[in-house]
Length: 262
Image (cartoon, rainbow, N blue to C red; front, side, top):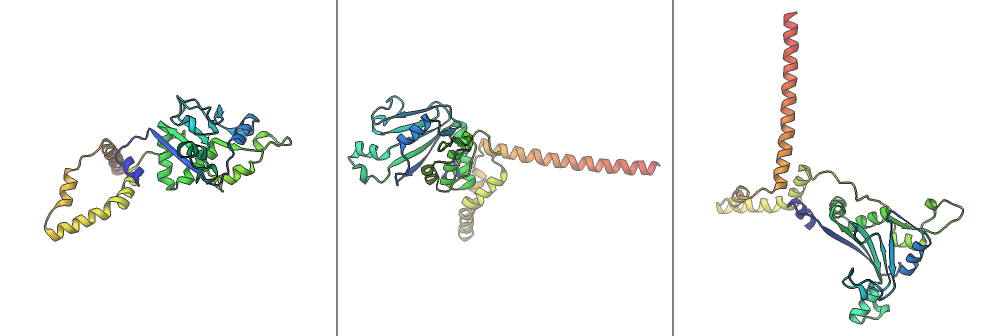
């Protein structure tokens, strides 16, 4: 609801992080890093980096020294990359929590900027399911497999531990294609869900008190550039309909004239 309201008000999403907490210890980060080295990571990304506990470059991560074994998939300078690290080690260094008592063992973070962040928010608004969006992004960009010399690499089977991590989520979403523009239909849907009930309550209060709060709010509201753009689009569409009707009438009139003259 927050993202929908922000989008309606013309917000720009510059950075979105989506985190999956691995509480069961499904992920084994050194094992994933080794798979990358053995070419058992099929990915769109062109690079990966892995660091053991305490080896992280401090100028890139605020909590670099605390994150334990860490694997980066993709460039930290790009609009999308993944960061997978040992959350239990971080809690041990920060709070002294024993590793076997940590609630979250590992964390898989999807870090998105600019256009990728915008498209991810649109998918969240459409699906209304954070897990679905998160795993869909992961599925599109990376998969860990087990080598099978009898098959082509693209057909290697998914790693069993990776399948466990995916938890049956196999939808894929591409973040490089802009979704359809935020249309009037979406605005009306948002109004129906978020605004209409409250507006109706205020109108009923106006009826009881003899006031005009609802009308005043509407009359005094300022339209954002986003709202003005939608009005312009709708006006253009209406003008096209009027023009089409005029052309249709002229065509009928011309036919009538030809008939009368013949």
